[in-house]
Image (cartoon, rainbow over all chains, first blue to last red; front, side, top):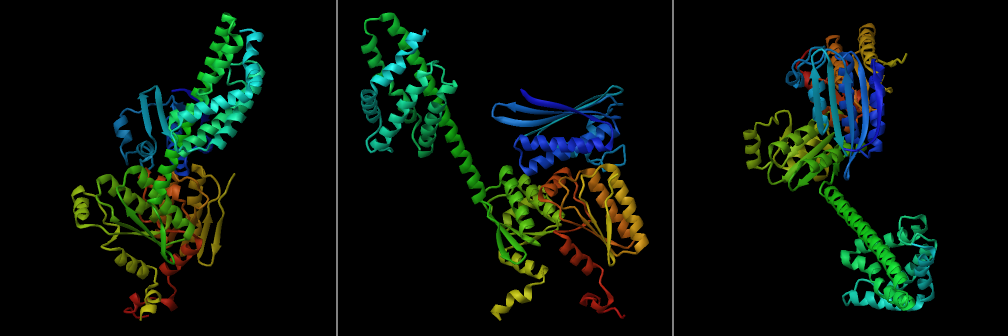
Length: 134
Length: 288
Length: 132
């Protein structure tokens, strides 16, 4: 898939989650997303960005504008070098949480995007890729 | 290709303009079916303008490079012709005929002009072929795009037509749904209903599904999501017109509509909505 | 540091969230609002979120928590002005905010709170059986 443009943002503090949200919003508008689609993508990015900080100890978010034939999409790759997730299936289950949230973060984010990919190694880190098509 | 051979095509276009136009028109008119969608006067106008622009563009050199800036106006005009033919329902070949039918008259002129010089004739003929192939392809591309736009617009119009949100009373909206609900359509229905709730400040929205033949799990869930989203915004929904077999399906599918107000008919739903907004007295007064 | 102002209107508290909320700000609002309810003895809380262009699970949880805590402190909470796109996304996310009352705008939210916390003089018929 050809990447038309990309940009990487740091994720260190709660304020960075807001920056990621704003960047995803701007890019989603440029990609021609409808208001609802923008909102879904921004919300999904917000969930994963928070996870990256809270559970991954911080990391990066890379935004990519992708063009595949007539389709345009927005992809965000979240990477951290934190403790990793031992049981991904469990982490994706609604209402499962190790923190103090509602446990809707990962599973909820997955429902808000078209493609969702997660890979993790205990002790090495976690990588989550979310994509939404116009 | 040398500058000398490059100059042949624009020269022929210029010196034989009137003859080319006549012959080209004849070609076009035989290609079209009788009772055609375009008048001869209009065709003559288009053809004359195109010949003019083509002559200017080829004059600037780069005879076969139709992406060159000098071809800008040729592309624009050809694009306009193809687009308007695409929108008027011309077939792809009818559309491409416009530019392709100029080939024969032009080639005949080239042969007359360069008859004795076989080498130059071959070179010029080749570049003329290349030029017309490119123009023909460009025409088809624009045509194709304009057809796609038509289809897209019609799809959008159909979706919007099929989801009218009407105001029944102060603060009461109704959405009569007709036909099968797929996920794309339901999303549009949902969005337009919620948007209208915000615009009108309506407290209650009635979703009438009398015209919906069947309900599957996905549709039922979409309905439920619409109701939930409306509640989050501060409006209540009533679902009316649930047919007996749909009621059975919903229960068999295990979809919980427990928290949703349902009514048999739109009239019942309306009455309930008036009660909920405390407007029952006012509404019934004219009848008394 | 940003701060979300809490206005007192008679026996109601009005919060209008105008900034893009980060998590610390949300926690701070929760703390300050509960403190203010108990300090003023407010009977109702109106949270206007019409300017919020997203509500994720964290902000959603904060809203649900405020409503629950307010109820313990004997105050009703009404969330007003949620945008359609936000509502659709929240539902998809799986967050239905049960137990949180909602209204389309501040006006309707006030009316809802007034009917939920009736003054003695306009007790509705439902309470007619009770003697004053």
